[in-house]
Image 1 (cartoon, rainbow, N blue to C red):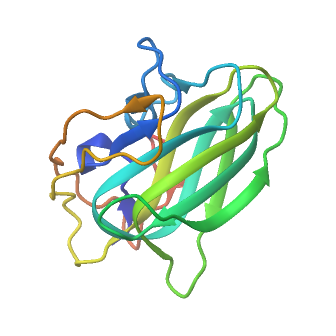
Image 2: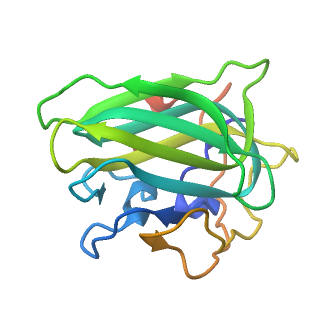
Image 3: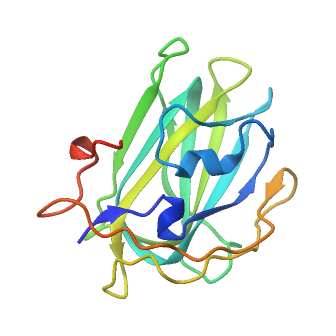
Length: 189
């Protein structure tokens, strides 16, 4: 059953981010809260890579942000994040003048898109600094389980910025809702 895999409790980690501020670390994107965020530096492009605990089938991606103008998303199915394939974008997000943006992308190949890693590229912003407040990646485990239990990875793709230094094991939040996950019905989203 589909669920949100972009949560630390489901074993997802940020393995690379091109900018780092200890007050606004990249992990904030995965804590499930709108009020915390990762902040970019004053130049573009900016990137971050999410590693899932195990391969998943993605059906929907939601990005909550502030001041993001251009956004692209790429996937990688391999065991290490070295070769990415275009998924969507560049998307031009609406200028909300410093207010929260909510970009929802349905992934429509036959039953979604397989991924072990997702790379997000912020190509431009409406201001010098942009934030990613929350990322939601809805889908299901390719192995038929939904416990998020395999170990993450400590590898990185690209240079510069934040690179995760350790691996984490996933917790075990179960599926939400009856008949599939819907971020619109999630009180935490």
